[in-house]
Structure formats: C-alpha cells, structure tokens
Amino acid sequence: MNQLLPYRHRANLFDKLQLSPFPENRIWNGSIIYLDRDGVLNIGSENYINNPEELIILPGVADSIARLKKNGFRICIVTNQSPINRGFWSHDMLESIHEKLIDELKIKNKQAVLDLILYSPYAPFEGSIARKPSSGMLMAGNLIINHSEREELPRDYNELDTHDLFDEGEMSAMVGDRLVDIQAGNAHGVRTFLVNPDLGLPQVIDRILDKNDKGDVLH
Image 1 (spheres, helix red, strand yellow):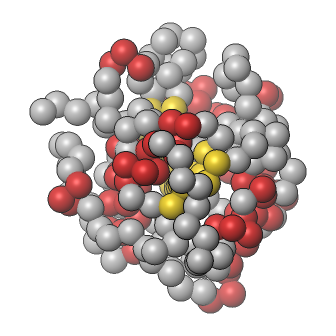
Image 2: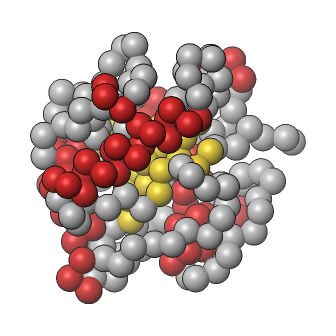
C-alpha cells in the first residue's frame, strides 16, 4: 500500500528529532499532547490562515503549553492544511506561518516550546491516512517522539502501521475544535478534548493535567 504520509516542519518526516530539555529538570512522563492548530492555538478562519500576518495566537495559549512542558508532556501539532494541494499556497508559506507560531509562543513564554509540527497537505478526495479524521499524523508523532526520547534514529517507515507504534502514556491526549480531531484521537486510542475555538487550549488545560479526567466521549 502506497500511503500518503504526513509532512514535518522543516525536516524529512523520519529524521531524528532533537528534543528540547524540559524546564526545571523535569523528565518525560511518557505522554504526548497532540494539538490541532487553528481554534486551539490561534484564531481560526473559514478562509484559512493564508500568511504569517493572519496568525493570531489565542490568549493564554503560551502559558498553557508551558504548563504542559513543566508537567513533563511532549507537544506535537497535527494540522490539516489542504490549501497546499488545492493550489492556494505552498509548503514554504506554511513553514513561514509555523515559524511565526514558534517565535510568538516563545516571546509570550520562553517555556512554551513545541516539540514537533506535523501537517497534512492533502485534500479530502486524496484519501490520505495523514488527514484527520484518520490518525496518521498522531501515529507518526508517536514514532518520531518515542524514537527520539530513546536517542534512536527512526527507520524510514514507508507506511504507518499500528503494530509499529509505541504504547501511549496514560495521559496522552488529542485536543481539537472539530469532530475530525476527536475522531483522530479516538482512532489513536488517546483521551480527547473538544474546545470552543474562541477559547482554545486554555479552556481544557486543567482537565488535561487531571489524570482522572478521561476526556470528552464523542464519535
């Protein structure tokens, strides 16, 4: 099977990831928080975020990411970006948008560090495993982060298979503002949290940090 795999910000998909140290000498708790982008980290738009100037980070997001890092979570962005394959704009434009996201978060809180950004440039009709509601981006994030935490060089996976995945930590979660995000999280077997796109990640940060909170049950 020739899968249409996710893309990774400024790297080949399965290049070794150089992970940043946690604040306050924390160690990884074994869990990954998978975050949608628009409506979770920044103000979304029905007409897409088309350039860096249109990216506006939601209030409290940087501090929420810093709280996750202080509690030992790795952070993986998983975002559908079909405008690329629809011909609206290029991979280079998306990279410039994500560079602004990275920089603005660090300006707001120096501990608000994203570990990995994955995206799907595919349109719905292409049937890619990388496009949510499929869980391909979460699967790739699981492999890349776990191999890197173990200081291993990931092999060049030609396709994504659940048999290759590492066990997810009990507090791993998918956070999104749409049903497709929740469906992707369900398919990957992690907790799921649905947010109001006007509030984003800060709306559910306390719930994510509560190990007894099993998330939102939606299908």
